[in-house]
Image (cartoon, rainbow, N blue to C red; front, side):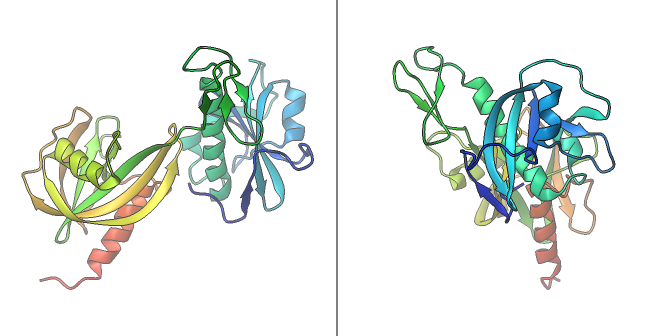
Length: 278
């Protein structure tokens, strides 16, 4: 869910909001979709007559077409043929570029919703002129959209992968380890700490693989591989239900191909499978 190649970000519409602008309309964590197969995102000309549009945030242009994030202002009934859907339910159903922009839109709308008042003095905030930020007119405090860095790491041992099942996962699904970076930590510090805390093992030979914006609600996932050094695998964290080694040719149910965890697993399996081993 990274920035599409044909997207030009901006926060000010160059010439107003055109009727054909793609709209990412949010009611809480649900997005407005035209019921179809596949689902279709609305245009501004669809949204305005519904009377639900609240705060609007211009995102930029995708292949020359404007993109707008909107937070609903009224709990009005939707016309026939429209529905609210969770973003995860749209994985592999709408184009990747629109899925990525939907994630961007959600983060901006949620940031706007949760920063209506200054966290320092309580005064109502205003949109800052010239940039995407909230500014307090009383004390001058400025708040930018929040991004929370988190590491993901896939630990290898020969031809095996260390995978874990979080308690919130479906019963059979396993994934790579993950955790948020704490103040004062580097990403590498976080990898070592989280692996130790979650499964009780030590690792080295960290190698960066990729990163991905993950709007649930505002994470930036930074993915690594690491090699096992020592320790007995045991779930040590309250969030981990199970953790174990899996041979690369006998993997369990894995996350959606949209997620960076799946990309991390698939690329690592391909790399290990190509290596000679005895």
